Length: 97
Length: 281
Image (cartoon, rainbow over all chains, first blue to last red; front, side, top):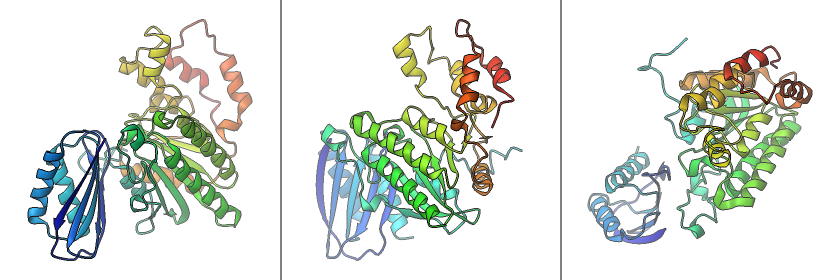
């Protein structure tokens, strides 16, 4: 299991937290919570070691469009980058619905 | 009565959290000790396994058929729904709080959604201790209010948690689900393929499947994979209250049934149905 931490700038406040997904094979769990300030922090725990660059690329792409100030926790059981992005978008949808 | 595959809401395809929510009267359910409380296993990360924020155990309180009820749902997709120290403690605490409510005069039923291979091997003795605590709590609660176990599939209910199902006041199953102490793969590995061929799906379901468990009187309701049917069956048993006799209290009945079986011959599951029918609780 590998731990990865990433930071991104944020521009707006978020009001609702969201929890989506399950730590099942090929899937992941996302916990998204509002934080004060203008920084977002992502904490990843993944069962598959050695993919830091891929995680960073996926999160870079996500935060290129998302500007909420949040703390995101990801518990991953080997999800593909596509699944990770979908779960992140689902978490945003829940928090803003 | 079978709902159309197009109009029904599958129960098996739902996550543990969604399954639990569908059983309550609309708008009455609230989750206790949820993922943001981060009651996760302290042991998995030490062994290189990613933990889950709710440890694969969802607890919800609310009303079923207008009566207070608590639902504990195990998430089969996380570590096979296995019982660890934390998920076991959540289940035990939920049962004990329901018991305390009953003792205060607030009748509260418990529903266990068992989608589990049993004890979580990474947590070994702590998981075993959790199973013992869960069983003690079921026995305490079922003096006051029904404990209803639901086994929907596809994981099924095996190992220590099959004992929880056995102690329950009522058990609800689908044809797709399986219930047994040792899983087919375990029996094959321990006793050989001549004893039990775990690849023979027809054989596995003829022995462990919901239809057989229902026909031999070990299950009280056989439902289709339809969320409404699950909610109806659970609601019916909540309203019914305690059974006249709990299945697991009928020691003499089952001792006699087992004594009457001749172990020197291979029993056909269909013949067992005919032999064990009639003595149903």
